[in-house]
Length: 591
Image (cartoon, rainbow, N blue to C red):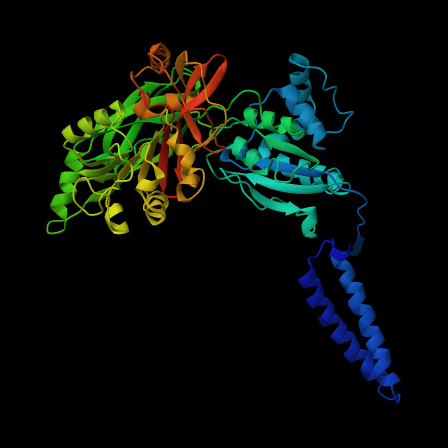
């Protein structure tokens, strides 16, 4: 593969424009001198002179004819850089000895300027007495983690990527959320950028999902992953588990850490977890995830505001505990009544609600731009509708039917098949009938889909249910059973909705206990008490079910509860996002 690249101080187009202008001037001047000559020389000589001028000026762009010949299969090196907001901070609070080591590595300090093996008082004295060393430390303090990473990766002579690109297929990716973004690769044929085009501006860091998306895209591919990050993973699945999966596929993962071992003093609102939908007469309950890296003992206030009006607040004291989960609870009926009064004559089924979660800045915070978050949900003002379907009147079905029929916030339509599965449910809009039109099905908010034999619905109706979740944004609950009816749904429209894969061998041994996962402990409906440790203990002491389905959770889903069968953990309650809606799978019918 041969291509022409421009690697000079000037970019291509400015050099081309300047070269054409100067070439035209040279042609005009020399043409005047040789005008007296006749024949073709009067044109050829000026053309040669102007061509020479054009080529000389184009040398500013540094043209290089690049030829690359690949013998065998190159290994793929995937370089991931963390572009979250925490990479934009400086490390002026870093240990002085580490600063000097880093200053030498970034060519800010000559190798013989100081013995960086020393530490403590000797190093401090040297810095105070040596202007060169003090200047190097000052320059290091001014560089953010992101700037240092750019130099480490992209430096023309000593950069990691230029060294690797000569022998491997290199891909450069940034991580600033659940989906990594590719900035550059050797296969594109374009020159390596001198700076990273992405900027460290986003709050969340999901190191695990970024790796998972790139692992094993090509079977038996020789690949290596290099990750550069400050290690502040705060979203998604654990990157350690993803790295173990990579190791199982012979993909090595190398990590390069940035930043001080000590966390900079900072308070931040990392995330807000709350319900998607709330009945207007209910209270809104959830939790705020706060990063608390401040020195312990400093007072601060956590607030939830609606257009400047404080709805909820709590006075707290810093603990230097890194991650804190603070629960909130407040009513919304009064606010909805105000919205109704201001919109008289207009009937609303729901109101979108947006609140600002904020921590007023306190003295000593390193980053003052991450003290706000957002709480969003939909407040419904009418009764929500549930479509309950099952193939038999299980105790679970009877319990759910009774509890929803007594709840004034819900309107339930229950369909339970009889002993003769040849009798399909009637179609229509009345109670006890399956909706005859897709629009009527979309009027529901939640569908409970139990052990429904496949013959009870047709393929178009299965497509309606799929669209109900993915497009309409409705909720769907699967509840498994001993008859294993769900094996009938391994193909067709509903197959893609299941968050689990059914395994061939059933589980014969009963579970010994139910265990909340980390995600499950922060899931509001599974909280039996306010204290997280007490809640986990209560779940472990609950009477375990006599049976669980033999399933495996798909990647990207959220396992909330696991059943312990011997030493094996079986996913029992699994949640997944599907399009605009959500799907919840229950691996037992003894809840």
